Length: 459
Image (cartoon, rainbow, N blue to C red; front, top):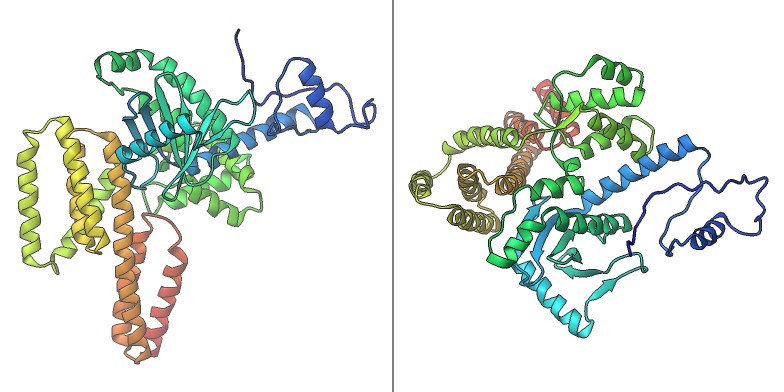
């Protein structure tokens, strides 16, 4: 027997509210009864709502779908594919910079599943017969959604509990993943050899993870597309704000663009996101290649390192140079597995240095890890390390900013205008550097400039 699951179907009940013969029933109850007679299985979570016209239905359903996609992808921190029998993590795709030890987590999950299957100790969710079984559990501050197939377990590490829409997508992904990569999974069972080729691309497309990638604009917009944008006031505003973002940094995020447009245009977020998504689908808004981000990071780090060298202890400079030369020598004898172990070790050292607030050392270790990842073209590791570098650099700058602003404020209180201006200008430089990450520094920059102008007038 072939069992089908059908989502987001429209249903024309053939009556209007005026000529409906079942006025004693709600639309939902009436539709549920009719669908059950046709052989459909309906559960309590099934959403049924009415629309005024076919055109409105199509438009609003698309909006709702895109909004749900976006909320779901914002919720995802990591995607881990585990071998069903051994519990070993076959593939770990980090969506955010959140650091998660996939091996430790896999062991934790496998132990819980073993316990659940023997004692029913784990929370197993299944709203109805049409929904397949999921395991849901807590790990540290994260929510774990787990779906088992014939060969693998799909493990979603989330900020919040999974929506019904995400559960549907995970079920669909698990079936398609095992069908598409069946040969690789059978080879794994027979020989222990695993080839993850094209799997990450499939994860990205299946869960629309590219919606949280850094974005830019296409270099040339076709005339017919530009004409449509000019006739759509919302899309025109979106395009102008995207250009504004790109005037100060080489990329932007959809979430930041959405927030900024929402402040100006009095429309709901899901309506604005729909128009942003239309520009994305038309190829006007495009994802920024990882190499661009890495290159920009290296440029920033190079400038920061040059400035930091002036005040850094000579012993640290010599040590970092020696370490890097040693690493370059070792790389020539490494294979890919050795490189991954070195990357893991360097990230661990960086995290350790970060905990003690020695950010110059942590950045040095992360840059070494990035160097190794680039040499072996480990794109997954490059993506992860780039995210870590962003976050660490941001923390380091924030500490420096707090210090110079506090020093400037103290100087201002003591009527020392010269030193106050000096430290505020340093703070201004740091804040301008923050524009690479987001646009939230703009208002602080304006206030600080006004302060400097005021102090100069007093002098």
